[in-house]
Amino acid sequence: MEILPASFYRQDTKTVARALLGTLLVHEKAEGTTIGRIVETEAYLGINDEASHAYRGMTRRNAPMFGNPGHAYIYFIYGMYYCINVVTAQSGVGEAILLRALQPVEGISLMEKRRQVLDPVKLCNGPGKLVLAMGITKDANGHNLRQKPLYIAKDKYKVDEKEIGTSTRVGITKAVLLPLRFYIKDSSYVSKHV
DNA sequence: TGCCTGATTGCCT
DNA sequence: GGCAATCAGGCAA
Image 1 (tube, rainbow, N blue to C red):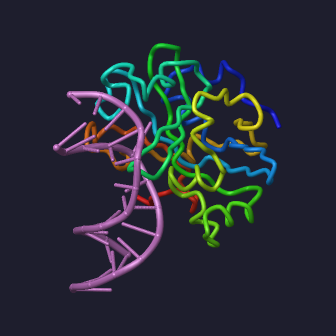
Image 2: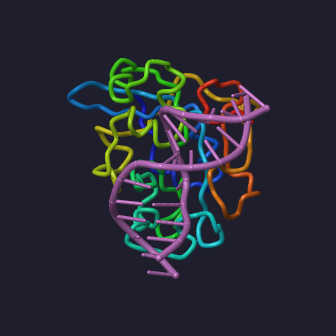
């Protein structure tokens, strides 16, 4: 496994959001290792993006967004779900990428057990679902995604620019029109087919 | 298939 | 006090 270098995350946020497609999210736990191929991402920009948690500046909740690029920002939403983001750009800027869907690669039976679902398509096709399937908890908030047990690595298959689709972001009520959602067009593991 | 709703809680205004 | 980067299930067509 070749873990993505710190320099990868210091690029422009939209560039990283595209480049993350096709990479592998790996979680090594005592109960087993789970791996998912990232097939859908959304970019959340800094203080000019109304839909971003960083829009009103740093608060207790979003502080990790303003921290080190390549670290995780995990937040609690709707009273029952967690979502995981990857911090990008530079420290202090407050930009991050929401991981919205994965194609299960390894540890599928463990994912099925955690999710109480058998259909492989439904295991990780949403931000809340993939966090559950991968066994990620709020303890990983601020974790460096270049370190075990939770990290992002290159896959042997490279995604071509032509395979990437763009759309508006899902589930937000502000800055609705910005084309900041990226996904692998022919993947059946994305959260929404538009 | 697709729209609508309830569940449930931490955080910001 | 109200809302939120969600999800699953129910009901209508």
